[in-house]
Length: 340
Image 1 (cartoon, helix red, strand yellow):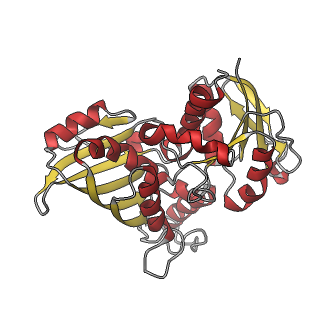
Image 2: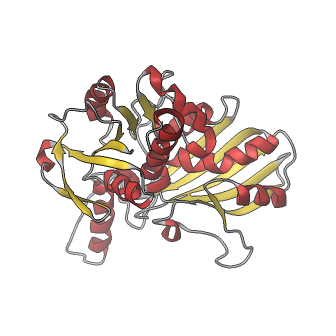
């Protein structure tokens, strides 16, 4: 016996990936509904070898449905997630709306799978920020071995993290550079993104950090360990899909780079590609479409006691969003709903 599953935001980048991954991983689905806003009503989306027509989320009745994967942004989620939850449908939400609610578990299955059991308080589970998700997958097994004191991370985040508009803007600006008669001023981003990098994601806060950077701090503490100190610099780069991170970690205990490499090779969700030669590492282009979080360039940091540095890359539309949501649904089914 399978589940009745809803995908809300099915016409967006993340919603389409959710449908793809549900099919790829053969999630036990008895019935599936693809929801979108009224302006996208009837749009066709793929689910395995089937084609679904989207339904209007505004009029959809969630009663009798088991799980809803939400990828519609915070404001629509504020309206529809409580409606679904009240109808008995467990919401797995990709927006930031519920991530910091103490009654809503924030889950990365490789890191804190048991936390899904806290869904009962609100009937909602939160999916973390894309940059946080891949980082904590790499940090968890190392934290279990040597206890992390401090993390310094610089992110290199692709434009797909800003949705279709971000991808379109990079594409259009890139074409315009080769055609001097065209001009594509920034709209989605604060400055030109083509052939440029922008050290600004989300809004600025009073302390000079951006909200994206604050998210990485708050979410790492909630998911992994509140005692860990984190500081982040988040940068948008002209890459279509795939987030990269330069991660520096200070541990309480000594951890040799060779042991760290061995630990990560055995860790769930991690793929180590670390050859000290030209090309012996993974770049964003190579991770697209893959489930894994790739870790490369693992090395000692001689400037601090018990320090390591590494390079972490993942498909942000997958592990950073859609894949993690489906993995949460899988854990929820095994631990709590037990129908599949």
